[in-house]
Length: 242
Image 1: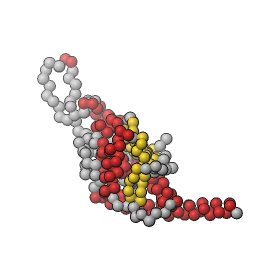
Image 2: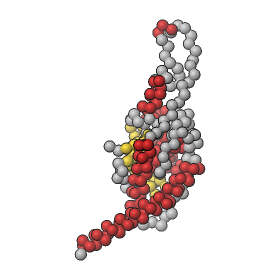
Image 3: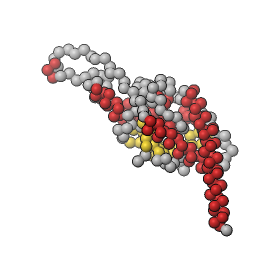
Image 4: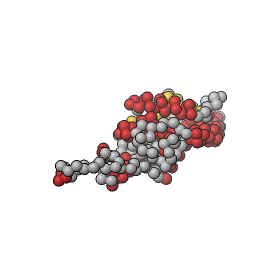
């Protein structure tokens, strides 16, 4: 089963809400009035504080696995067809997430404007894909560790949170960034930590610099390995052809 990391876990939020005597649907709106006291005026309670998700070591490991799988996929394609282009191109397939086509395109535009060493492009022979549906875990990035990675966009979560922020955040995992739920709204990778009111979909300066760093040194190491593997494969084929 693929490992995954979620922007904000629905189950975690539900537990926090239940502890406050609220359902997810009425979060911040107040509790139901008991039948016996229905006629008495009841003061509106203060909104319940948002219970931010803190993540886990397993999810951090899954983030890294996804990035490494995409890095390997891109490096192998570059090794097979060397290019002089300075920027590395990561190809995605959004055909399985038609509801979010605008958010996916906007997310790619955001990252392409923010960093220099890697570019996102829609196309065939993709390095990863986007999918949509319903999942109690919310939205997340997932990989099997062998180059088959995808970003899953959950319907309910994308109604509760800013959808472009959700999509750009999950795409940040593809580019190598981990979650940082304790960060401020100005950090894209703080995800659901600041709560649903946060609509920032732009990576901050540190996040931009980190992605450029990863896709410079990190990609070169992956490319060197891919070229080495290709050379060994070509040598083996040459020997077998004699």
